Length: 226
View (cartoon, rainbow, N blue to C red):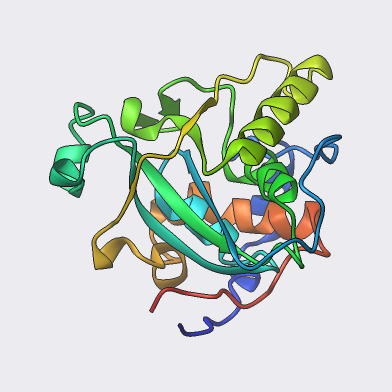
């Protein structure tokens, strides 16, 4: 995998202010999970998350310290229908998702979820994420084991009890049934196309918010797929 050049310089003060105000991204500072998997246990682990267009979710996690790779793809449906044109119909059961491989000695699963909820997605939007409509853009956590399920459910309950978003979280928590890598042209899209209007409006502010809200977790150079 290649190390991409820093992108944060491409995001101006106005975009950062918009991100932190929740305008284009819904970004908000959040408390750490009360219940989490202890740091430092075992080898590399995987989280699979969906939360709108995978370009932005992948772009955020490629800038997170402790993440070894983040891959755009599809989860929730069958291998036969894991193709962009079919997933885009909203009828395949798939959600645009990101497979996040992380080192639990550097970052916990709970901290992955904290970043996901705080800057990568707006968990109050049902089957919708800003300009994108349909169940393929739903928010969903695909847990890999009972520990991940427990951490995810407890954290959602914690955030709802604290009224962290002002509205209930509608993100689903479901068992992992398979992940299918997206087409090559979707990988590293944020890094490769920072000038694209969708990326500039909705996704680069998420990277800016990551740096502002989680400075110790932010990595200036993205770890990319290619």
